[in-house]
Length: 194
Image (tube, rainbow, N blue to C red; front, side):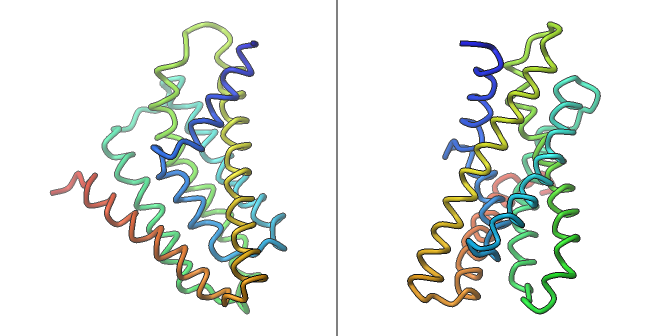
């Protein structure tokens, strides 16, 4: 098996690992306001997140940027909580105005999550010249895993909202409330300030 394939698998497994549920929670919160018919918009949003975390993942893995692991682990649930809270104020009529803002927020929050991914990846990377391909493969694996998670969430939305006749607003509040509540617990568990 090629090294590229190994790191691609590692990226996929890392994002889809239920033990690393904080990244899954972020994607859940990010997707909560969308329906299956908006899948293209969601993929662009998740790709913005990927671009953000790819930048800091590379910089941190190459030891260009170094930020306290405790701070990063604290900030990750903060990003989930903020995303979930913003979903509560989402209004369909203002959606087109908020799309570009959501892309920028996803990109920025991706920068934070990339620092979290780097803690895992740094232990796997060697110092050889193949680090570029390892990083690329890991990021591709993360993106494929995120897309898989997105489609699971959107299919659930299709089942509950469009087929099950659940109100879209209720679906949003359910997912956002669950993600926000778990994130709030994580914030208190990982608190570095008191």
